[in-house]
Length: 333
Ligand SMILES: Nc1ncnc2c1ncn2[C@@H]1O[C@H](COP(=O)(O)OP(=O)(O)OP(=O)(O)O)[C@@H](O)[C@H]1O
Ligand SMILES: [Mg+2]
Image (tube, rainbow, N blue to C red; front, top):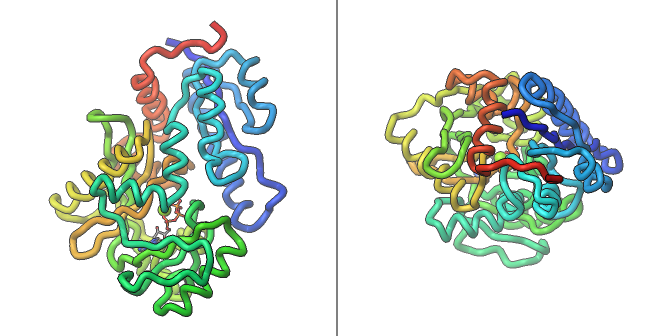
């Protein structure tokens, strides 16, 4: 069946241009160009920019289904903005819905939902103000990070702290740069993994687990996935996929990641970040709109380890969404 696909993408964020945002814009542009190319081999595809004119543009383009790459325009629930508009217009779309994106973007909400569903996640405290009393039950070291960011924004070599005064200083600094709240979370010292999930329900494909090893990263950037490590130390980061772990640990990590995906009600694709301490997997967060850059993005690396080419990965994500939606219908018919 031939569909007309709307590829919804973000505009570069010129008004808040920082090193972090420029790098993210560049990744998005490369990804969108490649996905356009892949989808165009099989379907009619139109690019649609996620801006204030999007409702008219969607209505005029006679699209059957949207492949959503937009992280939204601004605000605390930005990842939900395009899904909300598509739901309002009755246009089916690939990927998670309004609620799952909003919960996944706010790590504090996601963690509370995880706890309810017995998905293990590091103990944490939420700060709206640096003078709030630190919960004495939290065990140092702690990592201090913005609650509603991604791509390593706000996570740097000095994000891991060892005493209370440093918590206050770091919370105060992040509150000046990022919207509240700020999250103080027990730092799980151990191996790091990320898990890619494609599909839905019992049909989910859990891709081979990717281990990220920071042993060659200079100490000042942190032995974790800080912004600097993500942006500048790809060449010194070791990626192992499939991760060299026992079958038992592999099953435990996959089961916990899949449970976390279902707990938030994610759809079609997501990437779940995990740290393991004493053979116990802790879920750090879910990326409900994971990067899909060829070669570079984790999901792409995992697919490759499973023998799935980039083109096949994109088509599989689309087909899983179509299977979930059932009948794709034209908005104007
Ligand atoms: N509680 C924790 N224990 C150990 N390491 C952590 C913890 N929280 C975050 N980290 C480290 O910081 C990195 C980034 O954290 P997190 O995944 O929360 O941020 P992000 O910016 O949303 O990431 P992404 O790029 O995946 O969107 C993690 O991959 C991990 O290396
Ligand atoms: Mg992460």
